[in-house]
Length: 460
Image (tube, rainbow, N blue to C red; front, side, top):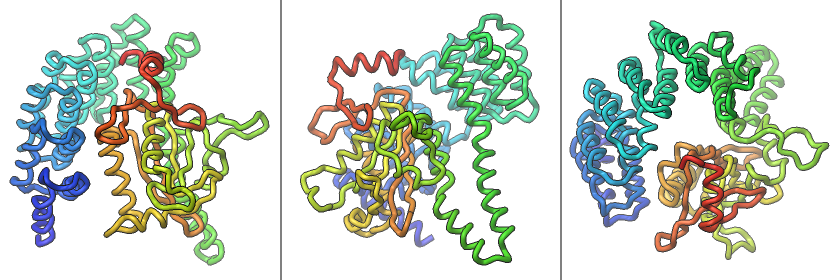
C-alpha cells in the first residue's frame, strides 16, 4: 500500500506540463495498474487537451486502455465523437477494445460508428476491436458482413479471431460460403474458415483448390501463408521449449552434458526474439549465388551476415565511442527504425559494429543515470521511439536485450508498417520520409515519396 501511495505521489509530481517530457512519460508508464480515481481524472483531462504534446496524448489514451477502468468508457465515447484528428479517434477506439467492459453499450456504439466515422482507416479497425469482446460481438459482426466490401472483409476476418466453442461462427461462415458465388467473397470466407479450423479443414481445401486454379490474388495468397504461419507458430515455439526441456531431463545424470545443454540455451537465447526475427527477415537474401539461404538459428547467425535491406548494425545508441564524436547515433538509430517501418521490415542490432563484432552496450549504460543496465536501456529506447516517431509504431516494434560472450547487445525487430511513417529530428524541423533501400536508409523528396506511396500503399 505504501508503494502504491508513493507511486501516485510521484505521478502527480511529474505529470504536469512544466516537467520534462521524459519524466511525464515515465510517470504515465508507472501508473498502468492504478485504480485511483484522481489519477484517472487527470488522464481524462490530458486526452482532451489540444495544447498537449500530440504523441503524449496518444500515449495517455493507450494507458487509459491498459488501466481498464469502466469510468473511462463514456469519456472515450465523447473523445471519439468530438475529436478532429483521426489518429486520436483511432487510439480511443483501440482503448475501448483494451478495456473490454460494458459490452452492452460499447458494442452498439462501435457498430453505429462504422456508419458515422468519416475516416476509412478508423472504420476498418472497428470490426477488429469488436472481436475483442468475443462471442458477445457475434451479431454485430454478422451485421457488418452486409456492409461495403472492405468492411465486410474485415468483419469476416474478425469473426475468425473469436473463440467459439459452439461453432456458431463456423456455421455462419459455411452458410455464407453457400450463398457466395463470386471468387472474392468465397476467398475471404475460406481464409476465415482456415483460421478457425486449421490444417485439413474445409477452408484449407477450398483455398488450395483456388491456388491451383489461380483464382487467388497475390494479396490473398500472402494472407493464406500468414495464417498458415500463425497456425504453426505457437506449436513451433512450444516444440523448441519442449526440446530444451527434454534435453535437460535426458542428461540429469551427466553434469557435462547438462552444462552443454544450458550453454546451448544461452547461446540460442530468447526463443520469442528468434521467432520475431524469423517472422520479419525474408529468406533468400544472398551475397552471391553460392551462398546458402539467409537463415537465423541463433543470434550469432545475425552478425555473420553483412548489412542489407533488412539488417543494420549500430555500435551504440548514444554512447561516446572513439573517433565518433561528430556522429548523431540517436538520429541514425531512429532513422533506421523508420526506414524499416516504411520498407519491408528489418532487424537493428545496437552494440554491434559495422563488421559484425559485438562490442556491447557498456558505453550506453553509463549515460542512463539511475538505471545503468539493460532495463534502463530498454525503457530509454522505448521512450525515445514514442517521443520521436510516435507511440502507435510500438505495435510494430519489439525490443530485446541479449548476451553473447558476456557482452549485452540490443535487438530491435521492426515489422513493415501498414501506413507511411514520417520522422523529424527536432521539433522545429519539418517531417521527413525515410525508407530502407539496400544497406542504407534514404530520404525521399515529395515527388519520390508520392511515387513510392502509390506502389507501397496504393489505397492510402
